Length: 167
Image (cartoon, rainbow, N blue to C red; front, side, top):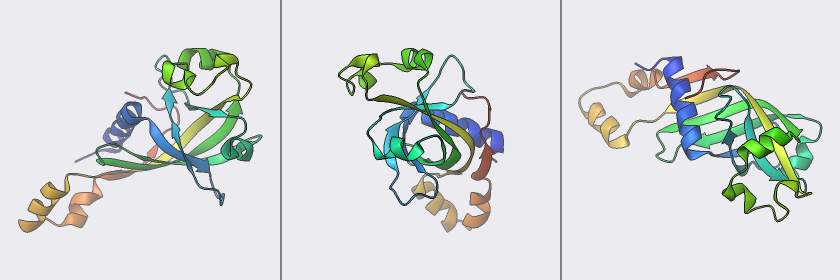
């Protein structure tokens, strides 16, 4: 049986590994956009950071701050999450230095001083997380009389993400 803490730990481990999520402004008619989540390994309870460009629709929509919504699917489709929290634009030079890597650098011709570079800070508050076991395994269990609704009940959780530990 999975506990909320187990599910939270699996979420952070999957996000750290896979890092791509769809991010948008909550309640907006604009589509969410695929973004790469950056996690600060030196401060595990820090926000999720995203490098973007000042001229994107998402950055312009965030403006002085908005509620954000992100959707995440682990590469193996064994975990799904919908995350809610605050989005703010940030120019934290320390975080830019700490999170900068060759993949990020490829997007900014002017490097860390590119005038279009914009750091987005996503402070997640909570997430609905679903664990998805192998469908073949689930099918076999169904053949042997397992109740899929009962089995699924301990594989979903509304998880508090504020300042929680990350793996």
